[in-house]
Amino acid sequence: MEMMPDEEYNILAALQALDTLDESESRAFAEKLKESAELKNELAAFEAAIAAIAYTAPPVPVAPELKNRLFQRIAELPIVTSPTENNTPSLIVRSNDVKWKSYGVPGMSIGKLYIDKKKREITCLMRLEPGVKFPLHRHAGSEEVFVLEGDLIVEGEVCHQGDYIRSVPSSIHSPITEGGCLLLIKSSTNNEMLV
Image (cartoon, rainbow, N blue to C red; front, side, top):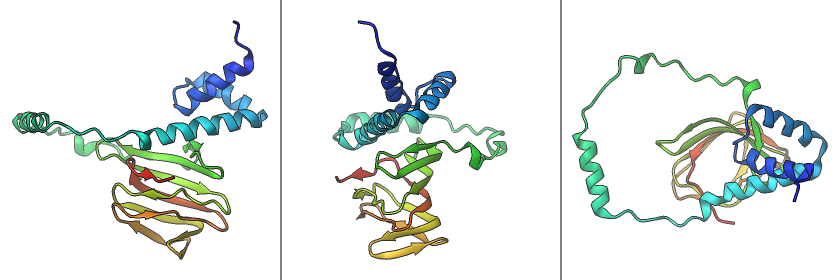
């Protein structure tokens, strides 16, 4: 059965959500996305599904003997320092280069700035449109939020531009914005969505 062009764009939506399109495919998809509300909804559905995957997998216990062997091997490794480590250039992300993506909740988008895979932490910008409520979630680690624009209501406290919020590990909340906001966030990639 020959694939219709719309079916091809639906496949591209899934690949875009997985961030696996090459540059030319991404450009073609972006053009089609501008003219199709249905395709935007399809992309948002794929992004929501992908965002939920990490929160649905049960934790897998590691066998104690495996952990012990691993720690033993790490302890035996020589400590090597590179003279260029301290000369690594700073990461600079220009505001025009931030790639905004739907976060899987209508009216919420995320612009990733940096992901530390070793620490399982993300630093990002998050934009919430007026009236958006962030899903109820539990923090796996400390979370830091700096309000760049607008308002964010956290645990009954209204925070405005310039305010800083730090949530401790295992804390649970569901912030909301009345007028919309732009946030700078540093958080764990292991947070657990509770809804």
